[in-house]
Length: 87
Image (cartoon, rainbow, N blue to C red; front, side, top):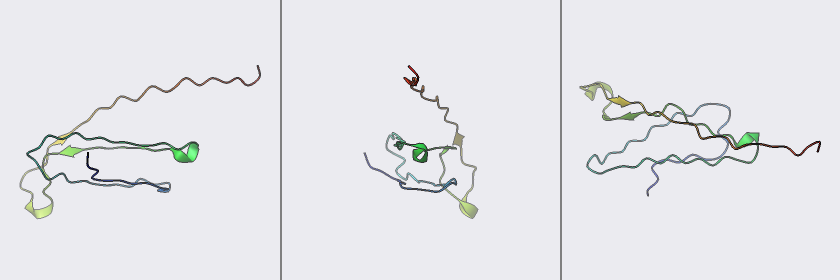
């Protein structure tokens, strides 16, 4: 599997927009979004507003509006947290 985009390290307290163009329209694709969370509160990750569009044309050259697909996601279940404090 080839990586087409990557981001790592401290990105600050802001959203970082990104776009990736996949040009080979004759092949099948599998999109994998992978994240690794750190050990404490500073290790949070977030992914938001993912759009897949048929057209990659932009600006004046665009003759039709791109088709946007909505991808619904189901949040993963949270692990059960228990405390042995005070026992």
